[in-house]
Amino acid sequence: MIERIADKSRILHVMRGFTLLEVLVALCLLGMLTATAVPWVTKMKGSFDRRNARQGFEFDIRRARSEALSKGVRVVITVAANHKSYTIGRDVLPYDTANGNPDTVLSVTDLPDNVTLSFSGSGTDANKLIFTSRGFLSDIAGNRNTSQKVATLSYDGGAFATVTVYPVGVADFS
Image (cartoon, one colour):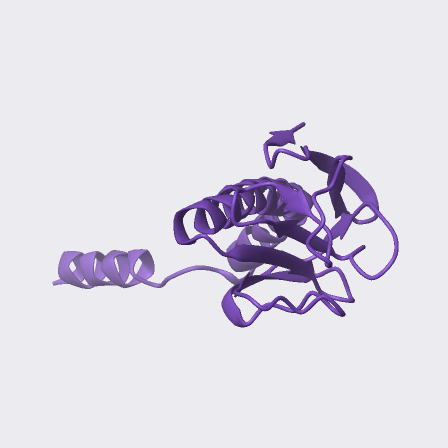
């Protein structure tokens, strides 16, 4: 009988659970692991944001030119005033030669956090990239560009990708 009571007390002792000290040590280890992982995860997110923005914009430029060629219409890529998004739109005759606004919006793309987009140039079409129905670059008035246009993607103010669009409409990403 005494042996039975001793066995029961050993079983109860084994099934008791964790001590407060063991729980605190586990929480400290978890906290240290989290503290070292947060900067790494933040850095990886920034890297993914830059890659996704570059690939998405590259695809959209090719899509815009393809749309212009296949549909025989003018296609306009317009950067928002805050440089955090851009719009792709289709423009049919007669063109809006005052503002260069498209008749139909095909898509609106929001850039990831901390990523901005800007185009080179000045004047009324500084925030626009316009492809003619033949796939060439043009200005708002419909005149073919004789010079290239450069788009710059930046992350936290530092440029990480540039796109040179030549007058013939071909884009070169670097």
